[in-house]
Amino acid sequence: MDVHETKIYRGYWWLPNNPSVTISGNLCIDINKGIELETIGSLLSEQEIFDAGYDSSPYEILLGKTVDGKAITLIDWHHSNSSFTYSNSPLDLSVALYRAKFAIVGKRHFIKKDEIKFTSAEVRFSLLDEWLSITGFNLPKEVSEGNIQFWQIYLLRLALESRSYSLMRYAFFKLGGSDKFYLEYSSPEKITFRIDYINTHFSTNYFFKIHQSYLNWQLKQKSFLKLIPDNSQSINWYMKQFYSLQKLLTVMTGFPVEQIVFLGYGNDIQIDKNAKTKEIFEIYLRTHSNFKDSIEKSPTQLLFTVPCLSTQLSLVVNNWFKKSEILDPVINLYVATLSTHLVYAEFQLLNYAQALEAFHLRVIGGKYMSDVEYESICNILTKQIPPEINKDHQQSLKNRLKYGNYFSQRKRIKELLEEVWDDCLNKFINNKTRFIEEVISTRNYLIHYDESSASKAVVGNEIFYLAQRLKVLLLTHILIQIGIPKYNVYKAIKRFEPFNYLKSRN
Image (cartoon, rainbow, N blue to C red; front, side):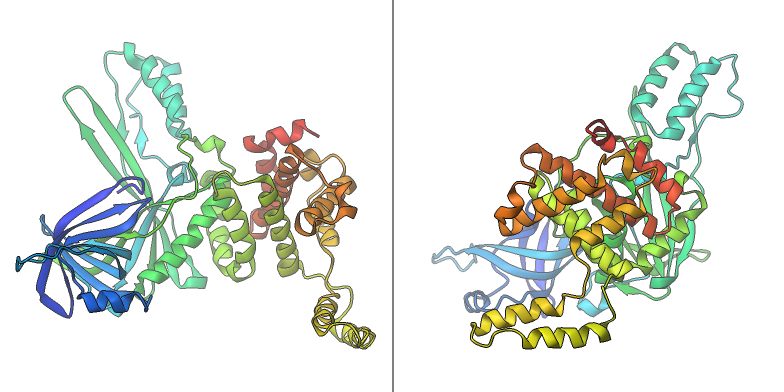
């Protein structure tokens, strides 16, 4: 199911500790509403509903069976609303609404949360096909110049290899004059390697689907990323790893990436004497999309694709997980700012500046002297605080002195800029000194409304351009830090089309 689709499950529902009491209702899974179950009748008594108003902790499990036989497990659910009908009828005609954090759809239920474990799971992201740039479509070798012109073959091959859909449509149009058209599909070879930091095997997976009618055929390949841990893991464990991969793809592609499909695999099922298959579960989570980007993109528009990484993919993914503890605050600020729809330029500038400061502090460090040396100086300065001033003011000054040994933001940005200046950031920033001054002054004015910074702070549209240059600086360092050679990073940053307008404003 695509994340933007609305899914409706009709069936009956009950609680694990009271399976004899069932009520009918519809489960709606929607990107805007989340996971909502509306029932005729209530699973909770009026007293339980009343008590729930004072206790916000969710219930664990709610079970359902759809009219077509699917088993549904709702996890971490709570009562949202009820509409009671008072009458002489013995039937419960009230309408109740429940919301859940997760919904698992499969062929069996989970009765307890600690039972919910999967031997492996896979996920599909937006832009994953383009990032992998791996296709199973190909023209057969026997196609010769006799039935299709050479330039037509070349055009179609180029379209298939680049996964440029507009070029593919053009190629098909140009081939319309041919009597015959040949196209083959074979499942691409999977990319597999181990992620040591989380004791897991990483793999790509591909599904091929055909939708056909009398005069129309649609052939589609969908790509997935699969994690196979050494031991079965909980749904929360997989969500954590997939969220990390989602952020990795956002950094690598240069565009916001969202999760589309989440599948979990359970125990082996014996099909016959010689064959087994895995239990498969569709997993939905309560989420909301923060960004709107329906524009189709080709691999050539992305910052990095797998073919660009060559043999470095395993190194990059392993580095990503290994350095997550250090880089997470930085990555979270970058991804959140990039992925949020209609973000004000001031918000972007503050976030990117903070992320750069966090990056320098966590990766490089930066203190004016050793902690031992500064401790004695800090004690001397602390004793000089006048005792007659307000105690809160005294504590505030002590706290500032405590962190007085750390580099200033100005010095941190200067060092980060110098490190990637030659043949990269100098293409986007004309004057280093002026750029740093504008960043610091604008940041200070926005946070403190410091009048002394007002004259040097940029205003209007210039705040946006300043923020975008900070973004280029931050992204360059993140890509280098996860193991991509500096030369390749520079090349990708300079050719990335969304950054081109910054060059023209130098």
